[in-house]
Length: 361
Image (tube, rainbow, N blue to C red; front, side):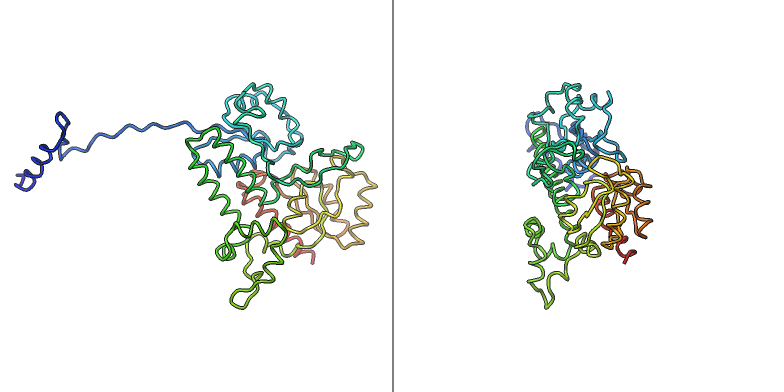
């Protein structure tokens, strides 16, 4: 039996309802309002690293595929009809924009998608805003496989990854402006993670990531930290993250297989003193290997760094002769077990190199 208070309330609700408007039965749940699910933005990236950064920014708002396999050299991707089909369906296309992916123009031409061609809103250039290193003063193919615009391996510096992420976010907002807020949130979260992974939580909380980023980009981070103190300790003691983990190899020399690491060298203050390749893109000759071994012995260099898609044995021949360590690492997310994100990738580079220096000391 319904009490009188309930009946009064129900009568009042019926009296104030708009004429002709239905009044809900108190015992029946209101019908669900139908929701519309919008399709994700289709994104195609040349490299897995760009695809992974796009996923970090876009989340569920994007559907992303990469053309290059994580375990292959991006210079030598062989275009397939399926790649052109993916680009034909794409809303956005991400490429370095230099001469690393020389196979891109043919794929774009075959795809025939005006939305993502050069100059279109959906065409995203990853290197925009990044100061390029190793720009040649002249182009001489006798010097090997020279990149005429500069070193294209831009993502090996985590601060460059932030700029790449900004470029991707801007491109996504051009093709899907209604989702701009979501992309801005994703970019902010990615940027904060890079700051914290690079500098450590404590320093970011004290000085803010943007301040530390500006100092690092200007080359003044360590001089600033060593000149300032907090609670009686220099700020260098509050440094964490990748920069702290890189301490074993800061200021040291290594041997590299190929010129993949220029931006990593700059950010982490490590130097590739020589390369396993005789010249960029040219396999090592016996004479070059012999000279390389003598150089390592003379200078006490014991660590060699190489992507895992090169012939491992060529690196190990060199390090075995000097009693050193070959650090063989993936160059892309997905390129090795447990390396799925950009953060995993940099973790692997830094920790593997630091461990090699500890072992060789």
